[in-house]
Length: 77
Image (tube, rainbow, N blue to C red):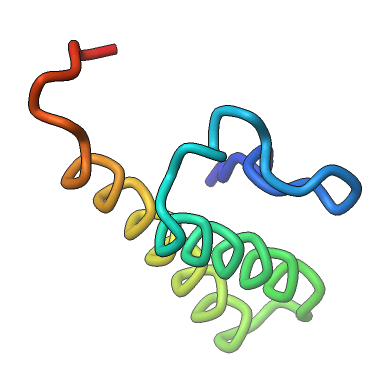
């Protein structure tokens, strides 16, 4: 499982390509990064597995929000 962590950096905040997203997207993205960091610090087991699952759910929410909030006039990237 690979989750990009480039969206939020502790020193510089949001990366330039994430600054155009809504406050909801930024909040979800930050929560996903925090959840992933916390899960990585846990010992192996059911709690860690569930924490990783929650981080993935948050990351998916960010991606779904980005897809649903795209402008219809914008060309596909």
